[in-house]
Image (cartoon, rainbow, N blue to C red; front, side, top):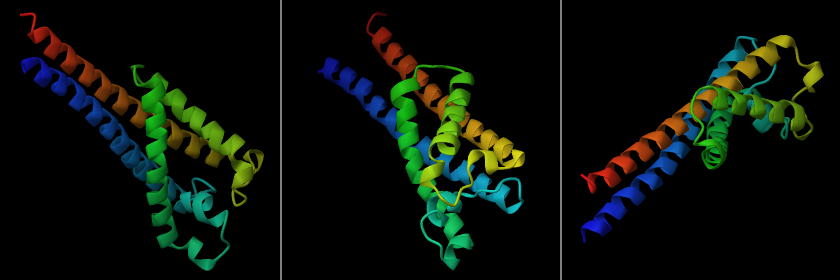
Length: 171
């Protein structure tokens, strides 16, 4: 009976680590795309979240409103669940700031170099100004560090807790 409870304690936190990773992804998507919207309105960047999500596919008046920006931020938060899951599955064991930073740079490169043909409202990489490159690059780096550091920390905490449970039986 005690062995079953011990196994249950070790399996239950693993599920919560994935859940925390997904929550981290959603919050990161909301936070950093929200800051991207603010950067767009202060002309630090030529693109906004609504440019990717709505203006590339619908050319209507409402896509230039605050409602479109807020909806785009929420949609990016939802899409960020997949990004966090990808990081969890591939890089959760890597500690430090560098893995998250490289993850953010890789995401930025995919979005701005590979996926630009999918989003016709976004100018090509060479047509964007240097302010957009720097601002969006920094936002993606911060996004990657936020996700990477948070997920790695939770994973490491889980393993330390699991190890302390397994060491309790040996004392």
